[in-house]
Length: 340
Image 1 (spheres, helix red, strand yellow):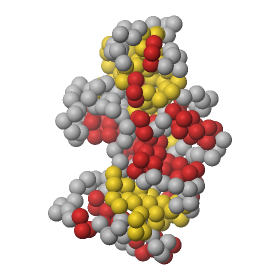
Image 2 (image 1 turned 90 degrees about the vertical axis):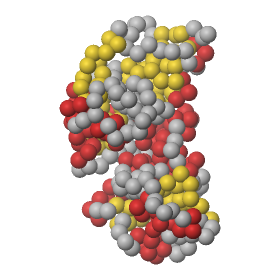
Image 3 (image 1 turned 60 degrees about the horizontal axis):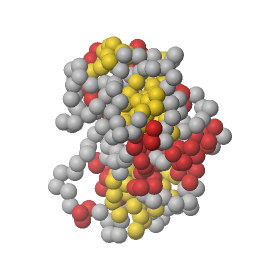
């Protein structure tokens, strides 16, 4: 068995964490003193410096997740921080900057709403950057989902046209900046015309108002249809989305912001002839270290924008963060920073 490598300062026996002991409202988010998680062989213990707040964690708090989630549970499907302890042969060293996300984190085992978290080494992504933790903390799940959708899901290439349906979501805004960096022409939607400026700020070439004429709007700009569509709104609009794509183009179903994940009485013949329909669920491996490094460099150089809605300091502000996320009044990612 591999021998562990640990930081010079041993982790304390106890830590502060947000614990959901029972499903409920914001008051179900309780801050408790709990044991620091013991690292298993093949896993990495991370000292958490920041984490993003996601709809998935709101769902967990409300008790609306699938059977994978049990209680009590420390939520948090993503986080960034410093390696505290790892196997010697993991390639990770104590004090190294790392990101992690998904893979059951915060659902089947304790998540990042805590001072320490342990995760499988395979879902740890090392990086080096001088960007502040509040910026890096916004990225893992958001960029992994956006990048994975564009590459694994759509195989997007420079010179192609991309439609993002659900464009003012954090994933939608991230996808726009990444797609522009890849060299694509980007169309993106919002239901509120007043938010078109947010899309332009993310690099969108053609902001569109999402209404009953969306397919016609797209065809006015691209008569043959777009090459690719990232579907984030969900099944309620999928049939209409499929009408925006050229023959042999692809729609990638990644999200369901409208809340509908299935189509009653689905028929394959609802898919236009020659149009491809795929999906993306994602995992940490879909955001390789070199890709994350490229994105961090692009952010530092001002070529990529990070849509951060608000920064919160300390676990004590987690209820405010989830409340603000649910309100939907501020676009972008809500990030909690654990200050020393």
